[in-house]
Amino acid sequence: MIESYDESDWLAGGKQTVYDHGSGAYGEAFPTLSGELSTTHNTGDLMFSSTFVTAPAPKNSGLGPIFNAVSCASCHINDGRGDAPADGGSSASLFLKVSEPGQDEHGAPLNVPGFGSQLQTKAIFGTQPEATVTVSYTYETGYFQDGTSYELRKPTFSINNTYILLPVSTLISPRFARPVFGLGLLEAIPEWEILSHEDTYDSNGDGISGKANYVWNIKEQKTSIGRFGWKAGVPSLMQQIAAAFSQDIGLTNMIFPSETSFNQSQYDHLNDEKELSDSLLYATVFYMKTLAVPARRDVQDPDVIRGRQLFGSATCINCHVPNHRTAVNVAFPDISNQMIYPYSDLLLHDMGSNLADTRPEYLAFETEWRTPPLWGIGLSQAVNNHSYFLHDGRARNITEAILWHGGEAIIARENFRKMSAADRAALLKFLNSL
Image (cartoon, rainbow, N blue to C red):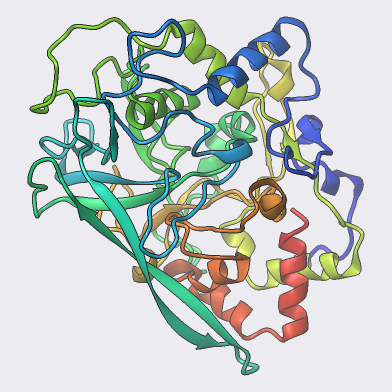
């Protein structure tokens, strides 16, 4: 149990910590970058914020033919979270992953014939979107042990106007755009460090059985540990970003060379060149790899210190592991041997039936989700002007996010629900200091 603080508590990202606590808090570069590295970072920043258009065009060409967004920044607003849809509406920051039951030869989800692995809700002129997606909410009331009431909202996703019939067997997983800062530091955590927290069969009997996901690494043509995505279904930043350019914007690239309409009736059967050059893909990867982490705030506040104690005693730290040390990397000293505080074990955990989707992903079952990092969570309102959380954006604040926890996290949830109002406020004040 930690009863005080030390100077390292401020440095969420080690030496790659910045002190911007305003709307740009998630978009700062590593403070140690200089020279050509800064130039590469800035080039990637430009690509991240660029709006792509239909080919042929002299600049930013290649959008579509079917897509979800016109830029990275239109989903990851200010390098942060997307905006959850209003009741009856839709959002560019939330999309549906889809698959057929079963797995391919690498253990990956099977594409849906005619739709692929993600529903594309927009299209260029002369092409039909695959579908439209809207969200509606139902509401339920619950009570803390002290009698204080709370309200939770649960989304239902409606798929309409499909360009062909969507198979009734289609499995669906909603995905909400996450912040993109600190990802290079997460990628630098050594594999053995992540696996040291794995307890697949709950051998210690604490009710927590975190497990690693093992996924197909396209670039290296081998199975690797999954680190990124809501279900840890992606092994590297390169693959994550290349997939986003392909699936979200429709830009072919060296990792995903086929158009999003490949194998559809709308496919043009043209053997086009890559729409995103290797150099610009690498620059975008470097940009996201070198986004710094905002420093913590108020670590000396007695309520924050008390909240940190409660976070531990409520067993939240069993999954939201506070700190990790990155591997030694002589080729890139900026990320080498850093003590960082992401508050995540990067492992899969069963979160219960209320948060389940219908789509397994490699070793991740329907109820299992990767522990999301909590660093920077208290700046969500400042950066994105909202505080929507969880994989589908259903939680409107941190309290609701905690109260949706089930499965392995039910003990932590109940510990929170049974706290006094003062203790709940202290715990939330701690989380908002991250």
